Image (cartoon, rainbow, N blue to C red; front, side, top):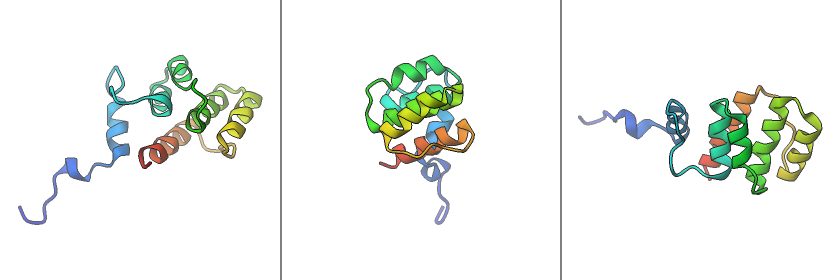
Length: 106
């Protein structure tokens, strides 16, 4: 085998997170902000919103993205301020993936 590396070893945490979106239920170890992102990427806005109610900076960031996605910009602005983050300009999916990538690297 030598230099060959298995696919599983080359997968990043973000790759595994994105792959889990094909499942009907989130991985059992997801909580808070990551759980909110998971539901948001599955299109389950209310589930995502329910997951990010603890008001940590990470949850506030997801909360902001959710309200921006729904078009409630004044509410989104409030939550971006709570998160200490600038208002995103990317499409919602790109923002959710960026959030997940950062949270998975912590």
